Length: 134
Image 1 (cartoon, rainbow, N blue to C red):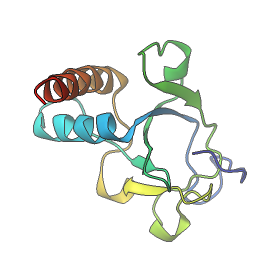
Image 2: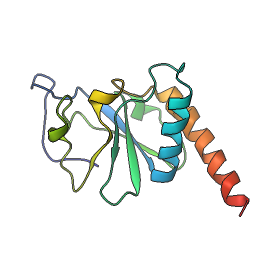
Image 3: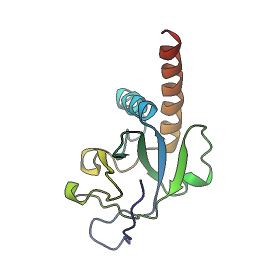
Image 4: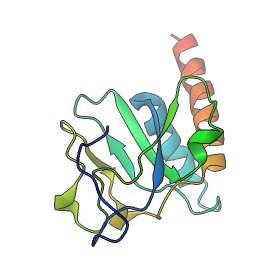
């Protein structure tokens, strides 16, 4: 979900340094629903990217999250604002067929990493329970 374009925070619409938590799509979609249902949680869900194949979702989180991210089944990488712009849906990230599931203009600025971690954990438990009922 990374683009080769380089942005600096001084460019119009450029994203400041952020990190990106990438998870399997099924778990990510569950987490989005969990966070949205718990509207009282800090800030709600921020912008969410999807890959063109539909295999993964990426949650924008504050810079520095990658330094301490250790949730199994997910990855957190520093984006340094590469290839991402806020405020213009036409300026979606350009890596492959990556695009916005939840565009920046429709949601909060970023997802709180603690809220995301809790939602991803709950999502994993729900998925496991559903799969075990089959």
